[in-house]
Image (cartoon, rainbow, N blue to C red; front, side, top):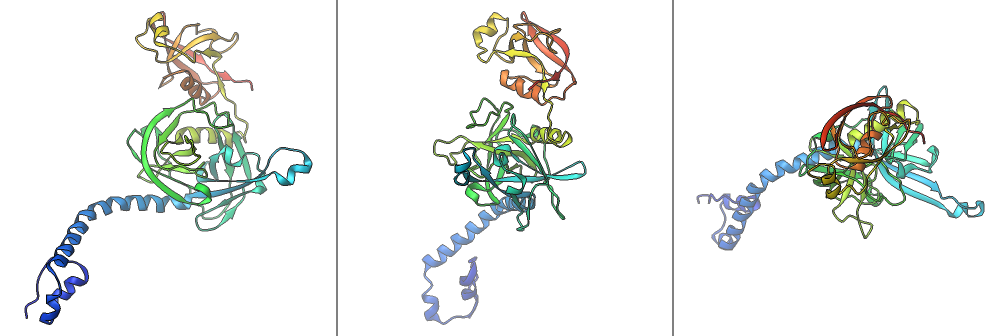
Length: 370
């Protein structure tokens, strides 16, 4: 008996290639053959998709050793009699990074604030646990850095968050609801999100990446990665009415994270933030722009200037700053963030509009007095 050659996968192929009694062959219905053929066709079509999905598996596999699960035990303020009832535990995530000759874990300040070093546990994907040697925090950006000493630690590869664009695929990793090293997938929904209300945190420096990759409580401090496995952001917050993921999550660009982390490490936690010495119009409108000879309200309008400040000699009320150094300024909160990330004492070229005309001035930024 000749074998029946049909493009059918699995056991059915074997059955058809082996001589079988006529009675058994009769039991293989045309419908079964057709169904098997459709499964084979589907397998061919999915093969290309599986090649693409293998990229996500590789990203997650490469990232896991650099991501830590953070458990922080904190004591809420209260009377001594109530202290033992006010112990709270916060879970989050962090990323191992190399800086100078050391290795550190970057995370959100709100994950580890109010927790002593010995009350913080950082667990790696292989189960190893560490406590920070040193911890430094910056309230203005909600960024914290913890020094970690250990053998065979694997720092993350950092990408360029400036190259990120809307629609780019990203993967978020962290510890949502305490489930460590969880990964979710999505796209960049927007960039430059500012003026967000982040609970009780007074975060002045905001320039968030918005993503629809699922971010939940516990993802804070974990990495947002591109498809090259490079960290391009730090997961920080969600916009939610329910407290869970609703498709709107926010991450701090990694360039901003590492700028502040580097300052914290170099100064052992004593950040000196740059200061321009101006007051800004939070409600800069189209009418205001027209009055000042501008076609639209882009940039930051000055409403007052502090005497004896870096701005006093060169800037005037009603100037509209449109570029600070090499950064195009979108609005007042954008200028606050850009100035706050500038090194104290740096000489900056500022482009502005004055009386409807473009003008360029040079200002040396000072140090803000807290």
